Image 1: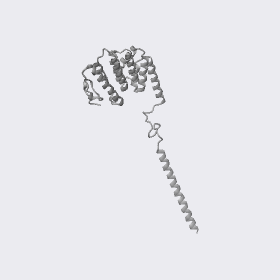
Image 2: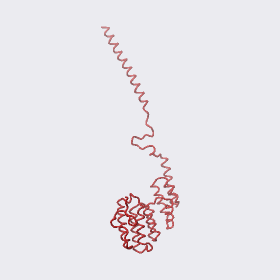
Image 3: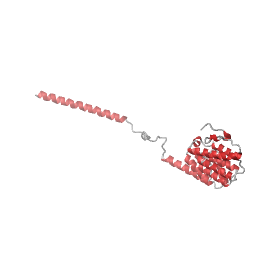
Image 4: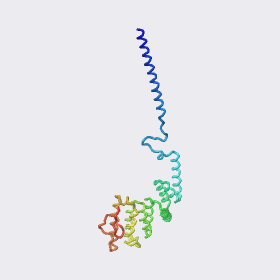
Length: 250
């Protein structure tokens, strides 16, 4: 009987000993595994979070705001070179704000003409605000040279509606005899030539389609005064090149 108790005691002791050893090694393995798991990088913002290059520090944001404020102040002071610096930032919205500031600053025809020349010489983008200012100035004093510039800047704005409005204004001035030194043939050539300055995307848009119909109507009216139509009505409302050549591209 005593031997049975002794055997049972030894067996229980062995089981406890083995359990303790097993628990020890299990805890050790778990500790080693947790130590090998590195904490997340401070630059990690989740699987779909912004990348490091897309994020801006508060200091960078403040520097950009300060630079923008400086450019706008220069524009309001009439410093046209601010427009070149605004272009170099790659911020289209800032560029437009600087250009609009310069347009507001151009309070005379001479100042506006100077701004237009600066933009043309430096191959800078024309905004709708500048184009509308150029058209408004031309309306006040229509001339042969002013007509070409107004149409050119309206086209450079890449705004089909604005270009169409300018075409209709020019046609109205011509009907009223205020463009007596501009022949019907010359005016039609201007309408067609400047049309191609608009981007392909703008020409193929809904507004572009309306513009093509406006141009087609203008051609017909002007050609009636020329006496020898050079653009076939069969091309309407497709894009037509000056001298009756139909476009083979969109």
